[in-house]
Length: 210
Image 1: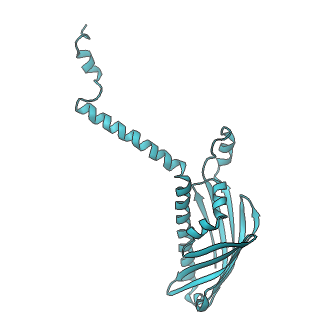
Image 2 (image 1 turned 180 degrees about the horizontal axis):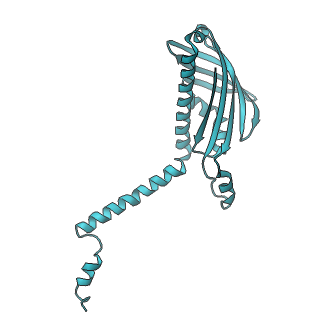
């Protein structure tokens, strides 16, 4: 099985890098993951439950990181055993980069100002499966892999928003909403005579006659 994809994240490259190297964050975001623990230098012990079509199994295995270039990316290799359901093993590469223009914008900011959020993540996965899983057919396996990846990034985005707040665009929309509401209220008040007098009313008021 081979899979590749690209995702736009609403956090900075550094924030995404730190999250992708945090076992607790990965445990929260990987669907069905019960354990993601550091066991040595860039070595992790992993346990997760997977369901592919009619086959459900609990896998236990290990993940190792290599070719680490912070905060740009790394390569990981994985292998897991699921008992009679079969096994899975393979490798993946993850690459992070700032959105176009984000790096230049960051350099133009005053010292101490937060960097503009936004980065892109590219990933590739090559995997082999055996046992009952392999008998399900490539189409079903590929569909399950894509669904798992989509679920992971939904959880990852939610975790990043919980930790760092919404992306700048979303924050701006939230900030504009109260102002828009205030404008509507002002218009209603004027209609019922509680707002500021308009120019016509002011000219007709005593003392303003010519």
